Image 1: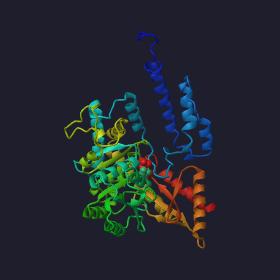
Image 2: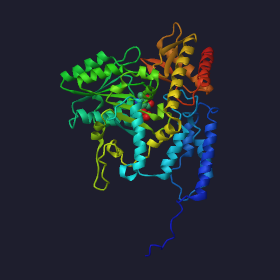
Image 3: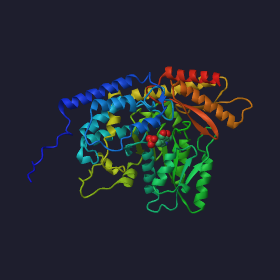
Image 4: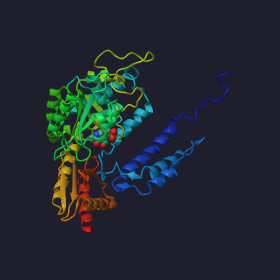
Length: 477
Ligand SMILES: Cc1ncc(COP(=O)(O)O)c(C=O)c1O
């Protein structure tokens, strides 16, 4: 059989005018969609399960369909349903927004599809990504020896942090290792420990104070008890902005304690870490640079599209030792310390060129634009807190330490369960209006409503709407 027995299979090779038309149409949809975000409901959650079932396509089609119809399906029906995470009214969970500049970076990276798994395959790309990692190291005040890795998010950054600490302090015997974190810590830390071979029974949940910050004395006692029992405390995870209330642990105090105890200090700054770029943030996060490692989520505090997290480690060698590995089929890893081969610093080999999503927006706008946006969020959270405080019936349950405030309604004579029901009803009314979308958390049994301001698209007008809707909702309860 000759090599030309069949006609060449060229159907997948989209180029020239056909590619141009697809890109132009996708661009048009994107520009229209982004232009409409301010007018869209803050969330559209009705009949989501029905939509999902209607969309299900269990058997892949043997032949293709019109891309015009497919793009229309995406933008008209698929993308619009659910939480409006990219919109200005999204004040729920931890927002971010998704800079379209970074989406363009993602398109460029995927369309050119160069291989960033190993340095030799794309040295220029690796260098741009290395620069972006270095910027993050400097944002948190780390020295030149620091290294880092872009991950898909905070969860995997926390995972690599546990692995790095484990390798540095436990070696191969994991059986006695113990991890400590406050009772406000994100659940990804316990999951990371489990994935890294530390069972949940060896992850201690340490009590927090009235501001939801870890109790250092309780931590010290727990470490002493474990040491007496022959266990090996090796990792403390501090918080630079908890998910529920944005609480920041006493990072300087944690650093002193962990240095004294020879324990690795990892700080989960997935939400709060980037506030270190601002003066107020640096005050709130004092001591951050003394942590051994820090999780940062550019898809939160740098407003990038989801799928962009990061881990930075003060002693970059520790990160490398925990993740290095190669095969006979791969090119050699560069020996020069200034040339970074990311496969040696994280669990992945093949991966997307995540660093470009950070690189392009920072090069386009400068760090100052990010600093000013973060400062605006701090202002807005403080303004919202004062407006809430001035609203009769509302009490602040957690003052903002960064850009998140938790609050609730209370009425004389109502017990906890009736108070919680009242707050649940208030939240539902606000969200029904759909100009903003808020979520709640549980603060020691109390149903607490939160306003978390972090989207780059959220400005004063939208936070004013949140307060208006809360006040109107309150009046109807
Ligand atoms: C404090 C904190 N840590 C970790 C995470 C997990 O990050 P990701 O969702 O990017 O995996 C989150 C997510 O919101 C978070 O708020």
